[in-house]
Length: 376
Image (cartoon, rainbow, N blue to C red; front, side):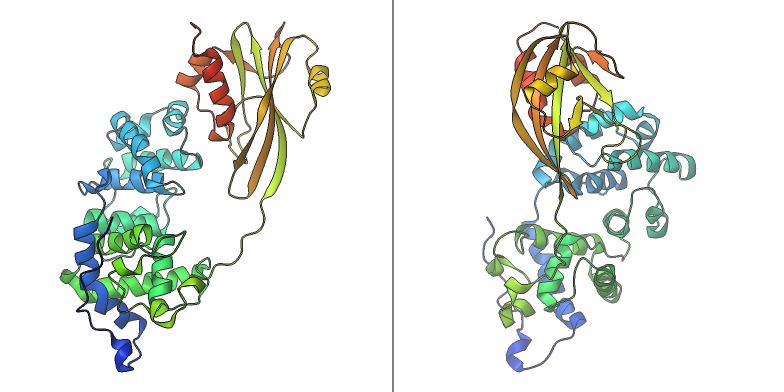
């Protein structure tokens, strides 16, 4: 729980009737921002040193994933892959298993590709150049900026969604933060601050301070904690009473709803999985057998005439970026092997070896419960 901001002495120029430029607004708060961060920053494992490899992995994991959810994955991942070379040489199947549960599996494939590039071109080290980092697979301007500034003290911006929200409110900006032009504008502004302040500002701390304010003070959901904010005397949104109006974001398109029926096929205490196609959603991942649409019990029996027993399972839902799966499920015990490109294995073996997407979490939990007491 943060205490109220100790920066009551920071001059509030609104009272003087002086209109601040965007740059002046950030410059005037840079000192209090850094002091606030160094006093209040969260103790996160990837902040305990400035190792570029560890920073890179943490930043990729943190994309679309909460900090607390990432921590156990991060520790396990770094224990298995302590070096870039160990990551470059791992088989994809094992890599995906270590990524299982984090979702967005293309991230895992891209970090292996990037590791292979670094193993070949930079002696298995993360490059110390922003431009070279940006060229690596799966790395955009934010991630490149985070690595370059935190690990190497380079004066480059790291502007993510948290930072865009903070800057929109501090500057009173109605620019749409989902537009690339808005992001670039904010990146240029932060870069100007970093270059003008020079050695007075540690680029990594400054970038992380902006991110931290967005994560724990000017929060994404709910009212911002303005009394704890180092920007509170220069925040245009607070002064003008427009906090609830900012940031501006183009409304997202409604997700496409897809109905599916998931069939857990069992034959002699072994469960069927299959590999998805190499393209599209969850490319090349293993999954339980499923078909489009909402099938009734009679339709399921028609598909597999040699059913020894069948159990109807609770429905489940999973949300992707642009798609939403609504699933019904059945557990089928079969009297003979079905036709099709199936891999049958004991559930314990599947758990240890194959990455099953989190979209099927409800059905994985069912199998955990069903086979938890069985010896396999």
